[in-house]
Amino acid sequence: MADALGSGDYRYEPVPGWGRLPEGWQLRDVGAVAVDSQDRVYVFNRGEYPMVVFDRDGKFLTSWGEGLFARAHGLHMGPDDTLWCTDDGDHTVRRCTLDGRVLMTLGVPGRPSPYMGGMPFNRCTHTALSPEGDIYVSDGYGNAQVHKYSSNGKYLFSWGGSGTEPGQFNLPHNIAYDADGWVYVADRESHRVQIFNGDGRYETQWNNLHRPCSIFLGKGRCPVCYVGELGPALAVNITAPILARASASSRMRASCCPASASSARARGSSSRRMGWRWTATATSMSAKSPIPPGRATTAAPRHPMASAACRNSDGSRHDAPPRPIGPDAPAARLPRRGNPGAAGRRARPGRAEWAAYRHRCPELPAARGAAVHRHHRRRRDRTPHRAADRLC
Image 1 (tube, rainbow, N blue to C red):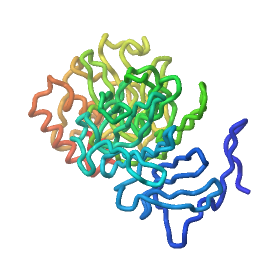
Image 2: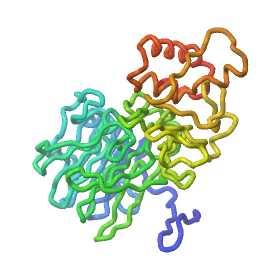
Image 3: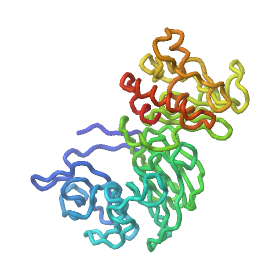
Image 4: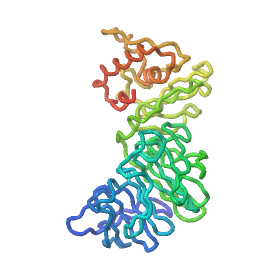
């Protein structure tokens, strides 16, 4: 007997061998599962037979969907026992009967919207329904939006945008809706679940999650929420915009490594870990390190990642003393050609500072930005943080 997982009232035992397939069949990657009112299990997968149906005990019943779906991703069972199948391969959501008859299609098969353009769909990921029948779609790998439709499939509006601020998304991977009217969005690469009202207004968020991929809400007024988390190291958002920027008030949010972005507390103030660097506003810094108002700074990380292996492109450690960045900071000097010696190497700005100046600082001349770009290209093959180089 396999060991039970969980604790207290929530303990679960794996069932080895559940889901017996016909000889020679394979499920391959399973995008999602759903259960109907008769406890039949629908497995939406990326094999030759996209929808495979089992009974409660794992006995194979039927299959359908061959030639209909390009890449299975999300599956939601509606209250009327219809399936909402989200296909990120052909950028559509299909409402189907339990035997595979298509009742409604949202999106145009095989025709994605412009990348990060804000309109449906570019590799949409999942679908949820409100008690009134409104349709919510998380979108997705090539977008950073949640789209709302009426129950008859009429497009209403969208919200979101690429970024890490409240209400923005860094790969919205799953979505759920509860009986009280709250929308839960798994903001996967920001390591959080954001919660909105039905009109898209940001309410709050859950932190301390690791790449939440899926959300399932139980029944009732206070349901248990099950969150599936993913392991590290998938380069899915390297080209996503606005993951490192300085706002008009010169407060910096740096995101140089898309594999890690989570909320934390540092020095008793609210800080955010974006990849290798921690950022905090000047008003929250310690009095021992005075910073002019409105100036941002990078604080020394308090995390095991701050090891000898975590260094900037210039070789300096990420836990080096804080260095001010932003439009109000002193102008950074470009690296000189040749070998300026150890002291010169330590004085060079790190990658996060270069990214801030090159992409977001309006005072940086174009020629200097081009020189920074060439500098990164020369050093790219000598740094282990290739994802950050692509963002820079």
